[in-house]
Image (cartoon, rainbow, N blue to C red):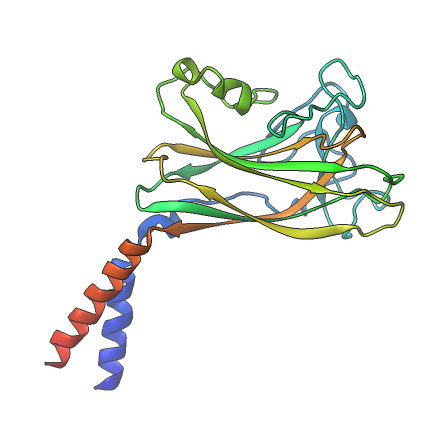
Length: 248
């Protein structure tokens, strides 16, 4: 009989658990399929300025990767191929982004875990910057995701494009050294309370915290939707109430 009660509880919890856990998904967050200095980042839109090292690219080059696996490098270039012009604005720089699905009104936050550091061929003395951001699309604006189609630029004319910057979090790393294997784990919690049921895009861009080149490495990106606490509590209470009635 106890086994029946336990099974009933688990089934009830499954019924009342917020559906958002299966709604938001990320593709190719580990970049393990990367080859040697590939211009396009698989499953992500990215900046491509004509030469891979002037934009954002994926690589498993042994002289670059600080963890021995595929990574993404965000170059310290802007359009026109001018070095060290990555902006000091935390939202401007070379980027990658992808759609992660449709927001659930019951989800208030998104936790983003990732690794951030320097390529092994960094000469040292640089300060690197990375920003993780979440954008929404209202479904009726003019924006079309594509290579070199910047979410941030689109968000500056949200009324036309339908793109809105919901939240962002910025991190810096440095000063870099000439040592290898310099990469660490980071976590950002982004606010989704105003997302409604719009399409969501997760974005990473590098920026220049100091007057140095910013060649940033990212890897092992993972996302976890965080439901509104009251919804989780109501689901649990409903399940426990159902179990109580079964016992009675």
